[in-house]
Image 1 (spheres, rainbow, N blue to C red):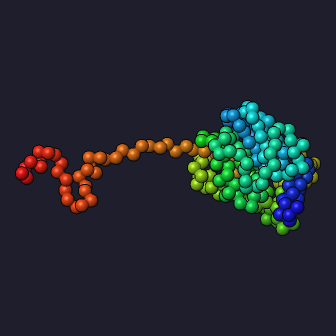
Image 2: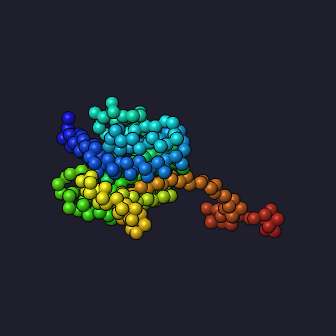
Image 3: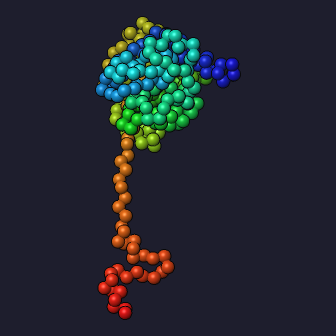
Length: 259
């Protein structure tokens, strides 16, 4: 196994272990609660989850019958609760224009090439299809923790946090229309479960007092289909112009005046 594959596998294992911790479980539970308010309103034939783990299933609330998980840890395939496909980070083994909804939890912030990943997402998504992106908000308690903890390489601070404004810009360049943004999980990223329980009032207070400072965010965007308007050629105008530099008579009557 190459060094890159070993490094990638270690990253996936660490992220899975973090989601198994009390803080990770609290984050996952809040993410599921938020996405349950989104997915039932998105329809189609195929829904795809693209992330780092097949153990975390974000698709249960969807009414779409064909659910698929793309993940990056081959050892987790037996633990998947739905159809799962092993792939590389920025390469999607999915046909063009074939997916109705794509859910992308915490994958852009760990991707080596998030631009390429978004282009692949746009390729496989049908026109008027939806993408749901979940990430860590740099403008929050979590962002502050990231500044101090990213040097140790611990999860989830090993990520490269992306501002939601930049994600909107990237999506706009790919002809996506952002329909909804949502910030949530206003608690500080503390490991102690008892302290988190005591700070629960901050969660309710943050939604009203500083809504853009939630530790996590969710972006829902729709792939726009640009209509092709037929171009009407001005044939009458064009026939008066001749490449030889002479002027063509507009009518037969005008031509007879020169006889």
